[in-house]
Image (cartoon, rainbow, N blue to C red; front, side):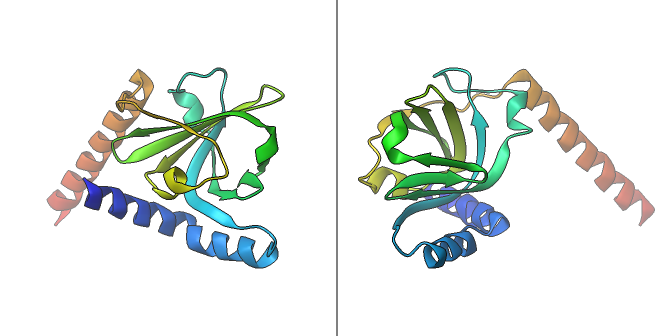
Length: 160
């Protein structure tokens, strides 16, 4: 399982250019220390429950950076001193960071598993584990995608 986590994280970070984004941020902001960086999908949540469903399709996809001063993900910048609640839920090969600010804004960020989030000391996190569940919508989309791929593959084999 450890090797699977590491492989998935490496592939996802490569697609999102996580290392490049981290280095650029560090060069542009020498007064901040980056403690964790990950490819992520982020949504504005409606409550404290783990969100599942179609809102993740249109989620913001960007590198999330945890610095000693703030969390940055795409168009969102969340100063650490405005966070009233933070938890990190792990499941299978991934994790979800759930945040609430003093003004009641709630965010959720889905990422591949990264131990940097567990070892950092600037953001007080509640930790938990959840079982990976899929919404009906997610299952239907996955079945359609896999079926389409199989059909495409069969057609390619028939042509040859």
